[in-house]
Length: 208
Image 1 (spheres, rainbow, N blue to C red):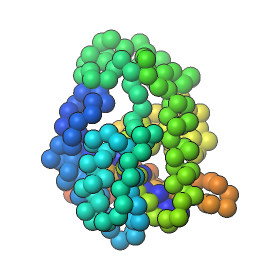
Image 2 (image 1 turned 45 degrees about the vertical axis):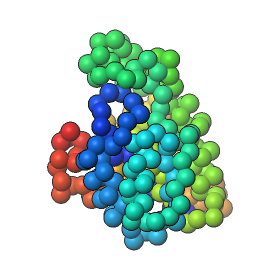
Image 3 (image 1 turned 60 degrees about the vertical axis):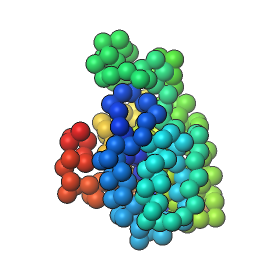
Image 4 (image 1 turned 90 degrees about the vertical axis):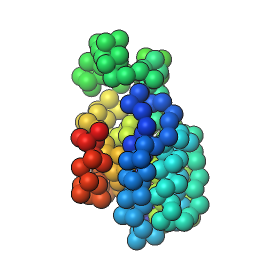
C-alpha cells in the first residue's frame, strides 16, 4: 500500500498557521503535483480540513477524479500563542523558547499549543487506518509539521529530533510511504520530492 504525503500549496498569508486560501502560486503547485502523480493510480485523496490543504487536494484531484475525504486529525501542529503572528513577532516574543526547541534535547511544546509527540499521537492512527484500508494508492494532503513528525516516528527518532528532517518542506513536495499490512509497518520511500517544481524557481520556498 502506497501513501503519498503532500504538503499543501503556498498559502495567501505569511502569518503563522492562519486558515487562509491558497495563493495563485499555490494553485499552480497543486496542479503540478496532481499532474506528477496522475500515472500512479491514486484511488482516494485525504486532506486536512484547513482551507489551504483542502484546496490543494481539490486542485490536484482534477487530475485523479477520486473521492476526497477531509480528516481533522491531519491539521497542522497547534502553535498556540504564536498563531497569527509574523516571524519577527515570534522571534521577539518567543525567541528563548525557539532556542530551547532547536537544541532538540526535549520535546518542548509551543506556548499553549502542541509538541511533536502530540502530533504523532493523533496522526499515526489515521495513517495506519489509511494503510489498512481497501485502496492500494492514496494521497494525503497535510502540513509540513505533520509530515516531519510522522516521518521522524517511522524512522524511530525521538520526537524532538523531527526538526532534523528539512528546515522547510517545499509546498506540494511529495513524501512517499509504503505500508506493509502483514507487519503493520511503514517504510519511507522518498522524502520532500519536488522535481515537478524545479523548473519554476518562483514556486520554490526560496522564491517566496
